[in-house]
Image 1 (cartoon, rainbow, N blue to C red):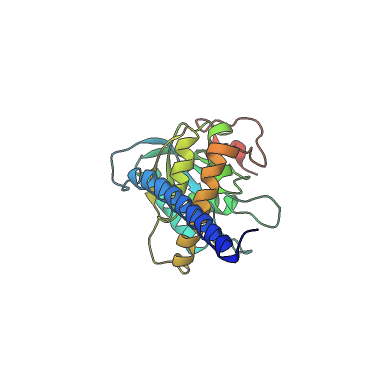
Image 2 (image 1 turned 60 degrees about the vertical axis):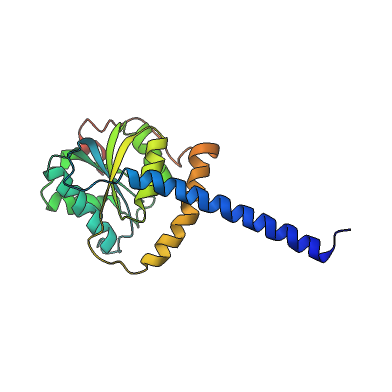
Length: 220
């Protein structure tokens, strides 16, 4: 029968091993992500800007992070760095809608409706990138989100076969930034497993809606 000291030693070894693995995966994803983050003035052209969703109030007001993401994507569009904008987020129920409010914000900034696609079932970063590839046929993209989120989004997209770079949407200091950075460590490990081992299907797939077409077909 194992002694108390022996059990404690095994637990410590297991804990240390798991911690090292988690940190190595975190480093690997951050390393690949940061290698592919570019400035908005970099000479790089892609099919689409992929804008990842975030909280929208019941009144349709974008949270600070999301507003900055949409504004950054619109600037990329106006600078001819992308031909289309893919708004991807949660519109899984009638009472909550991220993507339509993202679209309306971009339209109010002068982006034509036909150049804005909406992914109503982008329920997670992994699902958004999976659907960008399989549903919207995105081959190249500039991913737009905050700096803490970019490495994971870029890693997922590139692993799934989208030629992608990222542009940071950081335009201010956000409340809870330290929490988001800590949460990303766990999220990076989860999505490493998703893209390399489990490879789950998104909640919804559906017919292809090529990003090269008219975005109005995704409007509701």
